[in-house]
Length: 127
Length: 137
Image: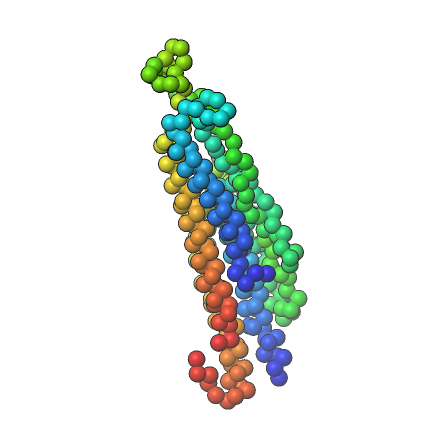
């Protein structure tokens, strides 16, 4: 009975999305660090990841969904004269957005675990 | 994977920006220095950055930043007529350092803003790590 909870679709989906959000934080750290490196192109989570995750969610095989990867952002605008396309304001906004997403996904995982605890103990946990 | 994501990259970036601030301080301090070990006036130093591939133990890699070089600015210094100066030539002209205080101030502000941006990432990464530790509570 425990296994199906941790392999439930929503739990696995939240896990995968947390991976992606954490990886996006990595990319933003690299982008901010290289905001003034000539020729640097901003990195982001591969846009294929969302499509692949959606496909595996629809076919019910989330366990086989690929892990997110980092690629050069194909949608980046504004190339400066030195070939760098990082905009600090954009990165900080993306950082905030990604943090909110991460916290939301963490809350989903937490509420899943709380449901399991409630089922085991028959009591609503105090905190 | 690190618990605090991207903190290793941010550490390198803070280090690189701090080096740039050091060099700005050096340039401003030597804005009037007309005598150096190498002879001639002080030459303004310029910092440049380059990416460096950081490969982690879990086989992911990310591009961090490092100081590529600290090179002298080759622009000639301004010639000032000041025959009382000990470093004046026979024609009374002194070659001053090629430091332009306006450029240095712009560099100073850019470097400290970049430092702040990286620092705000570090704070945010810490909050996320705390959130991760709260999973299941």
